[in-house]
Image (cartoon, rainbow, N blue to C red; front, side, top):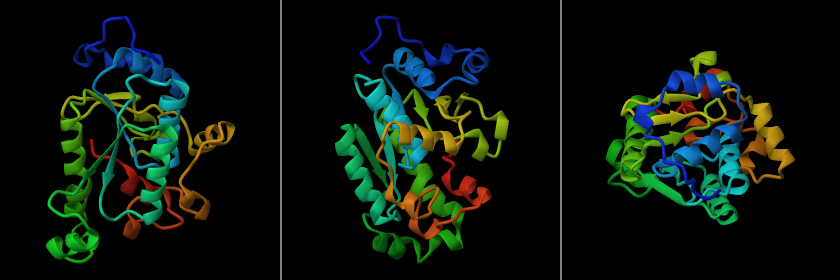
Length: 234
């Protein structure tokens, strides 16, 4: 999709109530198309490279062919499965991703992380672990990419707010936060993936519905744990 000749919309002037009424039950491609046309700069996708995030990426890169391509922001917590990092390299090659990787400050390996912060920080102080590995790198990445709007793969059926999760909302920094799959289920994401012969993370086939940090991810995850591990900070 080439840039629109229309004047880009200033996110700060958007009427989110009206926008959510319009797109409350819209197909994800409609939501993403609106974003690509009206927010041609400063639009970012955050991704863990789970199936829901890959559906958004596939729509942006294969269906809509956004130009310039939407940056895909990935948080390297230093605690990912090796399969995750291998799959991301593969996805980048397949889609030609504008991939932006943000890591923990001051350390480069999991061993160095343990030396600096102690062994199994996630069990000792999960809040601190989450802040160091996800919240700080995410906020740094969004700032450096001059983000005005960012997208997640969050769905209403796995968000604590349930049906109250909007498609469009403001984050804590008053950036526009977009959930294109808000009204979808995981079943619909998989149906899309199969229909379009999408690539997907190999650990999904080994019983992992969501793949996050290795020490925090089990093959079978109950809904409450899924929400706790996979929600990006607001």
